[in-house]
Length: 81
Image (cartoon, rainbow, N blue to C red; front, side, top):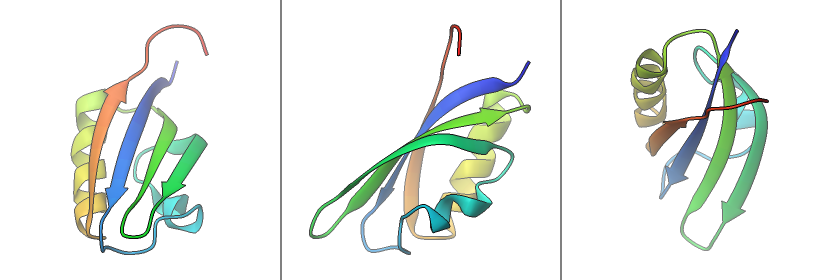
């Protein structure tokens, strides 16, 4: 059974953060995303499904986000989908 996690990604001056930018999220599949944009920052809360352990996902997402000038935090989801 795949794992589910929520990744919160923050962009302050990095690459554009939109649906297209989430197309190459590593080791996971985006099943839902909610975006918020202000004058100087944007963020997304993305629900991800992934086969890898949560710790492996966190490491992959941090490398991926850092390469775009973003920061990310990840929280595993528990319970039914």
